[in-house]
Length: 161
Image (cartoon, rainbow, N blue to C red; front, side):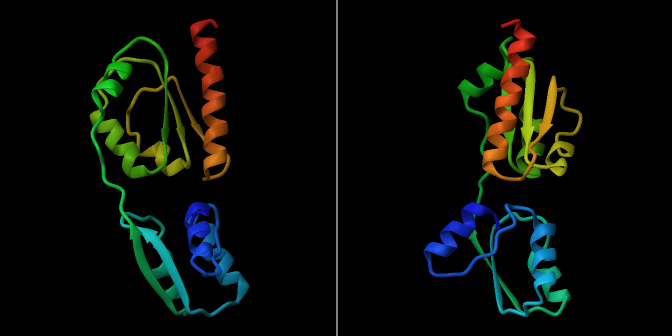
């Protein structure tokens, strides 16, 4: 569970445990705590890390509920125009799924500066040519903002600003 999901769960009366979106850290933290459950893993329709399955395999009582879906969307005409231009573009990518989709649909020639939340996301870019790909220090929104700001600085250097 990431921080945003934890906030919603807390507002609904649960006692959430967040690992800022890092499934391995969440599973390890729960197992090290010695807590037996029952646990409820709230997640998106497309999830990585098999949190509930790993906890069940370790003898914990876990239920998982899909509470949101992220539908893939094509690039807008405006996005295609920007990506087809000559100015640098900063692209934040939050999941391997969206990174793979971006790689598949991107046809532009603009210099790309890509911020990702993890190594897995960066790897999902395949052979997409980027000027720079930066992995956020932590898999959360504040770290992604920091990465995007650092890429903005890098893009300005490219433009000689």
